Image (cartoon, helix red, strand yellow):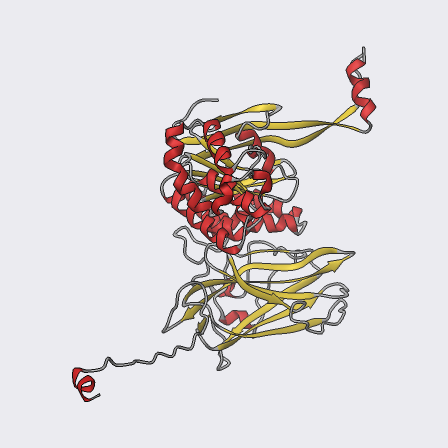
Length: 486
């Protein structure tokens, strides 16, 4: 592997294979076999994984359980050795894998801080300088002078996290560590993460919290069952990850082919912009639901749609004809249902993408069924431009009475609620799903199908308005005259 000063981490063709034996005796049989007979089967925890992380970049690794996320982190940190392939790391690593894994339970907190600092390559003088920040961050009081084995689980992880994140690493590797402690400590951890991120520390993180992935990561690598799937913008990769969760592998493969198909004369910059627009963003990062042609307004997609291959047709009198519909939306499903029309209505009944903060509005979905379904579930989600879920609900959460349907039936579903999001641009997604034999099934899902523009004359802090009622009473200072009269 050639060295490149641009990269903090280079992973090239890394595989990790474990030998699995049906019975313990098979391991002995294999080691003693004169004919070198195999009694095991190979399990590929990782299969030819390659990606690079630039210096100062924050990269997330996502995937379902068993996809190899933690394994690749342990190989990068040197905890595991790859079966094949190479990893090159340029910089001092602080790893938050298994918090406190290097602690001696009989040592005090202070002794463990110095011992781990020495293992990381810091001198006693350097650790003396870092100690006040570590103790302040951990905030476990005099327990730091007690043996670690006397700590509660909360104190233990607070000290371990404080040590790992306050040694000013060049590379920080995090594996689900930000879920430790109470909500106040987690908030402090996120603030510290943001500080070191802005200071140029390279961060490689694994988490199931998609909100954190979208908020913190510059780029995301998606793995599945030990295989590299794709890498790119966080919002796009999270959408692909959700397809894996919903077992929509055929749709995933089709989308990956589209992402990698540059044969149509598209240059690399245009191709990148096209891939990003599929997640609801244009090349400049704005919502990808701008002015549309009449054909796109009718919901026309390239070729056939992702649900049962039913071609979109321009119907007269459809609600979506009067909305701004995203021509580059992502949609998929098994085709048993089809969301053929949708609308958004303001408090005065106007069909519009423009909604006023503080007013009630209605999201309307019309669904046509192509097969019998016992208990369909209808949903909507509102996301920000980066792809983070902000709010949403479904008919199951709301306790709505939904009856079984058969081929040819239609449902019209209305969600009415108050708009409390701050003024800005948002993206609307919706779906029809259900459960079949205990498995979550997607019949038709529309990601980023339309934009929502919220108009506000009063924005508060954060994503939504708590609608506070303020009462302030002024008590004037007593004058000298009033004082003398008294």
